[in-house]
Image 1 (spheres, rainbow, N blue to C red):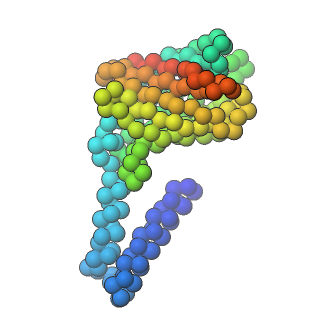
Image 2 (cartoon, rainbow, N blue to C red):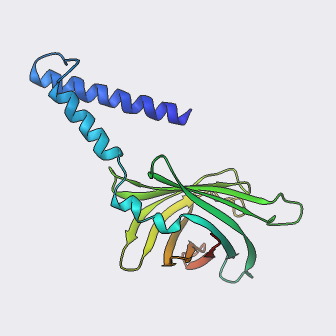
Length: 208
């Protein structure tokens, strides 16, 4: 449904841009050979085509074993878990899809499952990501940039936290390329008094 709505918005925007350009030219849009239509189509192709920023995500593609540790506050003991992540391209190299599987986080809970998507928005000129899993009913959203010198993608975002009950719990993240067979992902949160602390760290080792 969301995909169909997005397509309708794109088509409507394209039609509007063609109509506005044609009005400025003082004539109706032609079905073929119209400069406004060609310009609009060229812009849509330019903005919709993956580029070098997308290729920067290539090192994350593959199947990975991971170990994860997390804590809800600086004083809380760390919890750990391990599992497998598969990351692959979709839609012609426009987005990464990350599928995660692991053991249950607590007794009586189902095995952990999660899905994330990461991409680069050519219009906003930023990386954007979303994440959702079977431990909550909310969707994490974030946006940021790539630090090429540090080989790290840095983002800030928010989530609805099922543990604290916060509707917009702030976090920042750092996804670092260590080498072709290793990468790390860290998130940082804030205490009620504003202190920042590392809330999660994931170590990835390539399985294949």
